[in-house]
Length: 131
Ligand SMILES: [Zn+2]
Image 1: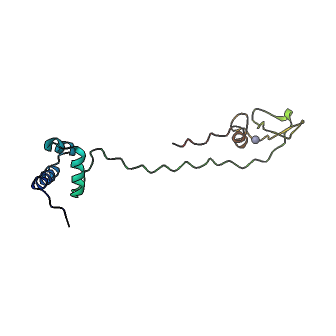
Image 2: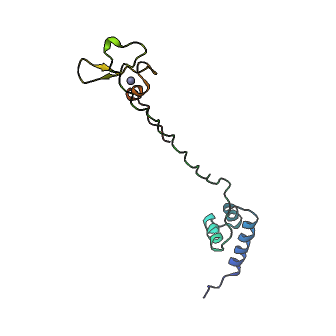
Image 3: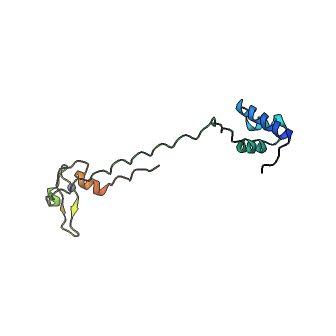
């Protein structure tokens, strides 16, 4: 059984309903009625008045960008097994072997002093930055 409401409470509710509909803020209504803002907000909530759209809505999250594709490593070229004396400015100087005499890749240089594959081996790109 609902609690009977005093005429003052009914009048206050009606005032809140009207001011809320006119666009007054909870704080403004509270000042006008001489009550706390939280009591106004509580009554607005209990009276099921429509909520306000905030003037500063939280922007929707941007969908995260897909990461750039991993750089494709070229296949390892066939080593020409050049000796050190055979190297020129145009031959890849990537060494093979674990002890002297070393042999060298010998493929065409694309990024000094290596071919594309061995440049990638020696100078890997840093992973893409994830924000
Ligand atoms: Zn090479």
